[in-house]
Structures are given as C-alpha cells and as structure tokens.
Image 1: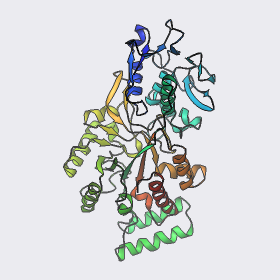
Image 2: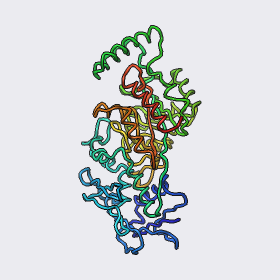
Image 3: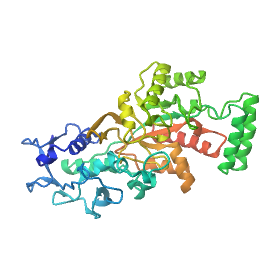
Image 4: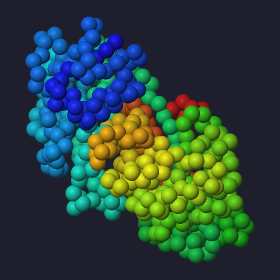
Length: 450
C-alpha cells in the first residue's frame, strides 16, 4: 500500500521534509508493505496533502508550519512551544511557534505540522542551534532548558507515539508492538582499591557525599583487607554485569583507551585483566565499542589514535561508539565519528534524567545540518543509564528501583529502550551500589530475558 505525500515543488525539494519521510518509512512501527512517496500518486494510494495546495475533500491534510524546515530562519529557545493535542483520551504533542492546543484531527486535517515536530525532536534542533550561554559543563545545552524536560515529557517517546498515531489514522488500523531492548556497559574505572592512596580517596568521597557510618566503616575495613588479603575489588562486578543469563541479541561493552584529563586514564587498556574481561564479554555475545576520552570528541587526532589502539587490542575494526560523560560537540563530533568508520553511536541520552532525549527510543540516522542530509551512521538513543538514575534520585529523592520500574512499566509497547550500566556502580560497599545491583536484577526480569 502506498501513502503519497502530495505537496508543492518547493517542499518536494526540501531535504528536511525528505529526511522526515524517510525516517517514518524506516521506523519500526511502519506496517509491513506500506510505502511512503512524495508527489508520486498511484490509483490505489492514500493521499496526504502537505502545505498550501488545493486539497481534495477526501484527502488527509497536514498543515505546513514552514518553521523548522526553513533553513534560512533559526529559532531560539524562547520562540517555540510544546503544544498538547487530543485524539480521544490520548494526548499527543506538537512543536510549534504559536502556543495553542486542541483536537489532533478535524475534518481529515491534522491541526499541527506532524512532520516538522518530528524533525525538531529527532535532529535535536534546539541543541544544535543552542546558545553557548545555556551550555552546561559537559559542553551542550543544559538539561533544564530541554523542551521535553521542562514539560516533564522526557519519559514518554512522543515521536514514536506520533508515528504510531499517524499510521493508525491514515490506515485505520491498530499498532501494538512489544517494546524491544538492548543493553550496554561502560568501563570507566577498573579497580576501586589499587593502593593506600585510593583507599584514602574513597574515604574522602564518603565524607564529600555525606554517606553514613556503615559506608565509612565498609570502605575503610574492606579497603585495608583488599590490599592485605587480596580480596576481590568492589568494582570487579563483571560476572554480574556481563551476565551469562542475559540473552539479548544486541549488547555492547565500551572501553577507554586514553585521555588527558582527571576523568581519563583510570586504567590501562593493556592491563592483563582487561584482556580477560574482553574474552568474557565476547563469549557471552557482547560486541566491543570505544568509549572515547573526555576531550576526544573535540579532537579528530585524539579520537583516531584511541580508536586505533582499541582496534589493535581487540583485533577488530571498532564500529560502535559512546562518548565518555556523553560529552560531544554537535557541530564537530558526529563528523569525527563519520571519518573514523563508526556505524553505531549510543551517546544521545541524559546525564541527569532518564528518558527519550530525541523523542524516540528506536535507532535512526541523525541529521547533518551542515550538509542538509542524513548521516550514514545510526544513532541508538540512550533511554536508561544507571548514573543518570543515581543523579536524578540524589537531586529529587525517591528510590532508584521504583523510578526505573515506573519508567519501564509505562513503556512496555511501541518503542525501544537502550540501557547502560557501569561496573563501578555495583559497588557493594555503598547503599547505592546495592540498589543498582537490585535494579539490574529486576530489569533483567522485567524485560523477560532470563
């Protein structure tokens, strides 16, 4: 079946509209056998009129906003709104330059520009064009300014919901797919207790984070024993992390290979134990990816050198990437990935929240604003990270386990959830570590992979 988007020549040549139509075509919620076309109707096609053209009363109509598809006009953070629309009892959301609300569809006409709203969210338009005055220390738009977070909609895949409803309305069907998952791990720190100095630093961290007496005692007591009696390090949690019971098809382990800041070089990639970890991971079905150092996303030479080291260590051409601290520059880092053979990136998630930063959980090709076309690497949006959960609970209260269970329970259908856990966050000497361990076990049960 063909769904034809009928529009003016101006829009037919617009690369941003073409990009969105291709995104919808490749979206996993697009029903099998459905083909989207642009100004290419057939006798049996369903027509959608887009833009200011004469519409047949039997056709569907999507009103063109001519805002985010207009590359000659850039909108700042105060010039657009997230508006609520209704389809029965369901709420859907549009990004517009006028504040309004109402029914999603009236007389076969969508009441907001669905295509531009999708474009705004999946391209991270607000971040690409953000003022540096609103950047955080990581180097991008501070999360408190993100439109989805301001409206507390970051835990809802609003793009996936729009795509789903688009097909349901046009084709008069119901779409109900089970949510899919992948799991990834970052190895930032190999050992907690390497020497007496590291024990003192751990003790100081307990004071800084105002942890209780139990954690003070555990840190000091176990730290000394680990050095004298060679006890297992609290960060050596790889048998839990790389669970043999984890039967997910898609899973990655990201490793670091360099760096020049205090956040880097926390282990030697050539350490004998790293080789053992890589062997365990590969036996259990994990692919190895690169976790570039703090500044590598800003320097192609640094990135290239680190990737070459990991290629050599693993004896494979590395094609999977996640930035350390999720740190990158929107106008530099994606080109570095492209130039170094990266095929899959797992970076686009939140540092302080959980949820769908792009409005979708499904992998997709991100947009290259400089060249006005899709990149040739796939973004796998990061929806759930243990560190983000810890930050959110520290700042807002609540329980780590209940927060994640609530997130998973309301997203059991029609999206994808990519998850990330760190070996160092399973530290059994901290209450947070015990909670993360409990969380991990409950997540494995929740998504039925045991």
